[in-house]
Image: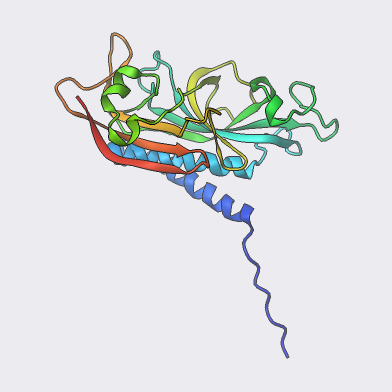
Length: 262
C-alpha cells in the first residue's frame, strides 16, 4: 500500500507574509499611478492599504537592517506616517508611508545595539531606544485630497456629524524621520510626520484614556492656502470628507458617509 501524502498547512507567519506582500503591491500600484484611484473612495482605499500593511509588518516583525541581519528586533511596532511639512507644498498632508521599528538587539551582547543599554520592556520604553526603517517607497493621496489632523478644529468642527461627533479621539502625534530611508535611524532628523502606530499583537497603540474609542484618519477634498500653508475648504464648493476609524484591536472601519464641509 502506498503511503498517504501528508498535506502541510500554512503557518500564521506565512499567511501574514502573504497579506503584507499583497498590501505592499496594492500601495505601490497606487503610488505608480498618480491620481488613481480617483476621489474620496480612492483616498480612503489607499489609506486603508497603508494601515493594513503597517499592521501586518508589526506582527511579522522582520529585521530590515542589511548591516545587522542577525540582530533581533525587540518590542517591534510599525507606523503609518503622513507628511506634515508646510515647506513641501506638493506633498504636505498627502504623502504617506510605512515604517517598521523596535529595539535592535545585538546577539553577542544582548544589549541595544544603538544605545548600548539594556533591552527595555514596553512600560519603560523611550522613543530614543527605537530604530526605524522604511517599508517601501510610500504613496501620495489622489490629487486634491488631504489628511486632516484631529487638532485642526476649524476643519473637523465643520465635517464631524452624527456618528462620530460625540466620540473622543486623541490628537495625532508627530515624529521626525527620514523617509524612505532603509538604513536604521533614530528619530530626531528629517521631516516631521504625523503617525499611527501598531504593536506586534496587531493592536493599535493609542491613548490609555478610557473614553478614547479609537483613532481617526480623516481625508478631505480641499486645497492648501498659498498664504497660510493651511488646509482649507475649496471656496464656493461643498467639500466632501471620509476616512477610517482605527479601533483598539487594530482593525479599521471605513467612514462611508460623505460629509459636507460648508
